[in-house]
Length: 394
Image (tube, rainbow, N blue to C red; front, side, top):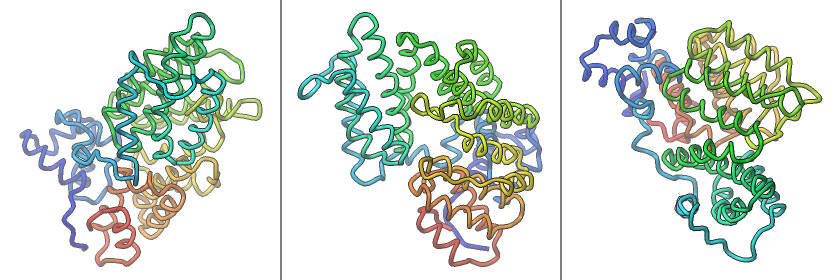
């Protein structure tokens, strides 16, 4: 077995459980988990799922970030990003005191900048997006104050910009900044004159319910969001995204049949007449449906079914490196659960090639690597090399 000095979720869970005076059986019962699963995670034999972390953190009165060990590491490590984050933080706070530089932007010019920034984010160029977002926010604040339809359209553009700030801040591990931007995003939606933006904000709002293990609460929010969705192609694209998020919530709530039902509804809606990305951060593509279909069994610790599904499809799209990288991260965990550690490591390396920054800082990657290290009786150069690159001590 490899020697290491880094704790995983299991060790942090064990310490916190004992601090709270709970046995493994008591924790399992309160979190609606099996005692054997709690034991396996604490022993490092099974990587903790996001649902497991959220549910146990809730019972123990802690945050998921504490169990992941990231609550004390929310620092910017991407080169040249720290200065941009400071400027972004200041710009987000200047909503009632905008100070735009240069000539005022027209709404059309602002929209073009948003389109460029969305390509940065989709291309995982987070520092570049963080550099340009502050100046854009200052201009959008002024445009959003206009009366009538022009003001609504400007607020719609600001709605997209807030979501980009949340995405970028989240990827750069600035949780407080991402939370403020997300709250602004939700509050602004009813003022854009576009009911679909209310549904989009509900979709993003459900992320918090995912993180904190309130899966049925998240599903109720998405059910209400569907009331704003009609039958046009763009509406159906939003419905696809809502169904996919509902599938994740249902899977983590322990209902695989319900999860697959949502995925099949999304698959039936996604098609040639439905735009893949009608709004920023909405992905109604068949590839995204496939990624969710393959990942759903992993939430139930069913690596064999996830592997079986993945072997029936091909997940590749240069325009969506985050989605493809996420698929490989899910499949690394699936193969680990299935019992093939070599194939698990192959998928970790595939994720690294496609989306290196996202892979390096994804909590599931660290847990999978630590589980692989515990399962191996001797160090392998390939595992040790990946761990060094990811900053994981094994």
